[in-house]
Amino acid sequence: MAAKKDSKKKTLVLLDAHAILHRAYHALPDFASPTGEPTGALYGVIAMLLKIAEELKPDYIAACYDLPEPTYRHDAYKDYKNGRKKTDDELVKQIIRSRDIFETFKIPIYEKIGFEADDLLGTIAHQLKDDKDTQVIIASGDMDTLQCVDKKRVQVYTLKKGIQDTIMYDEQAVKDRFGFGSNLVPDYKGLRGDPSDNIPGIPGVGEKTATTLITTFGSIDAIYKKLKKDEQQFLDAGIKPRIIGLLKEYEEEAQFSKMLATIRIDVPVEYVLPDEHWKDTADTDAILTLFSELGFRTLAARVRHAFELAEDVTIDQAASGVPDEEVQKAGIMLWLLESDRTNATYDDIIDYGRSYFETIDFKEIVEKLSAKIKDRELVEVYEKIELPLMEVVSYMNAEGVTLDTKYLKTLSVKMH
Image 1 (cartoon, rainbow, N blue to C red):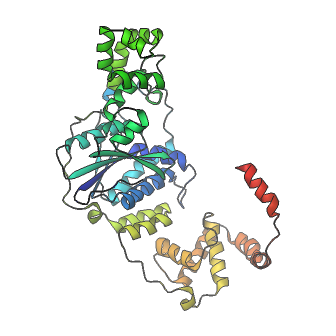
Image 2: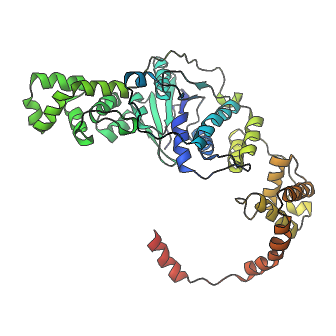
Image 3: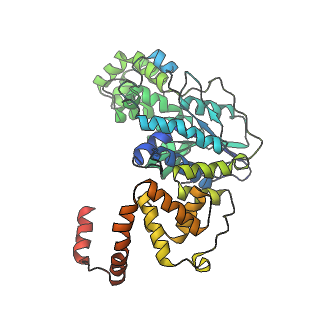
């Protein structure tokens, strides 16, 4: 869901790069480039970036990164994030490679040893608090950033599931989700903890109890001030004596957990709004070259559309006089080289030639495909298996096959 943009205001989108990369890596685990380089996380972060460009139409974009060094939270609590499994090597490679993406788009990267990406997001959003002409949207896959929401000045555009299902949170949306405002999100985590970050909270206090305490009494400071003054009001609100006992016993842990969960707004970085629109600085040639390396054909088309780039003039198949049979043969070679490229059309082959061979001449593309088939020792497969099957497949396509549609409909319901 896109935010309704005030035409008079400028929009800055802050990308939580690590959170988006992690989400995309697990959503698209089997993506790989033509050379075998893992690309699921990279595809996801680019898809998210282009979705943001299309839906939110930002004027400025910046990316914030975590660094591998410990943060001040680790210094304060040695078990912070303890229990998380080691980051997969394939994801680490893509996190490093993702910097090339932002470099080609000329999107600045912000990072600081000792702090997390969330702290940089919060700091930059806070630095613009007096700029009435700029609204900030934090794009993340991490719900921790909801504490940064400030009415409609700072909103959070987050992933619900996968890399396409998104939701926009302003202050009212946060209240609808939790029952309290964004400023109380750290207090909520201080009470119930956060298993994903190994923040302890108060043992025995879960989501429901933490929500009741906050919606009834307010912040952690307010809760303890009222608790020390009059326990009866907690009993009257339905808080069980056992929970009151836990609150008393674990006050220090609650305050400490809130500190760990609180996003900092004082990281020593300075953000200055650029003079140019983010699209005006992007290196589109470098973007398309990178996408070609990664095998992102559909994303390349979206970039051309987003940046209103002219397509190379290509003679269509009818005008070129290339027979269908020759297109099919070229398509089989392409499929043997890259198994995800099925049923390639004339335009697909020309596009492949443009991206990988820097030519749109069909004959020259076929020669180069033939050379690659030979290099990969696939000539025998092509000539003795695939070419003889062309006639068989053509006959099958013409005649069709018989299907038991009644059974398939039943199976469809069962499988769903």
